Length: 84
Image 1 (cartoon, rainbow, N blue to C red):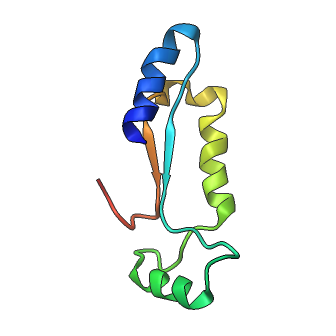
Image 2: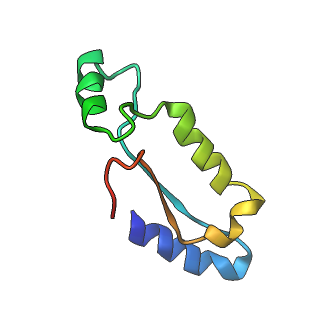
């Protein structure tokens, strides 16, 4: 995904189009059992997991005109759960 996002950014830039990627960590959704969420929360530095709205906020930013210069970036939205 990282390579695809960066390739899209390079090929789209001459057309005035920015492209970036979001790499979310664990997200609490209705399909995930509470037991699993509790196990993951115990391992997370913040002691919680992301809600879908938090990932959506990152996507909303990247879709905004203010994010043009982040084209080609991969935004890790994982609450410091893992670092590159």
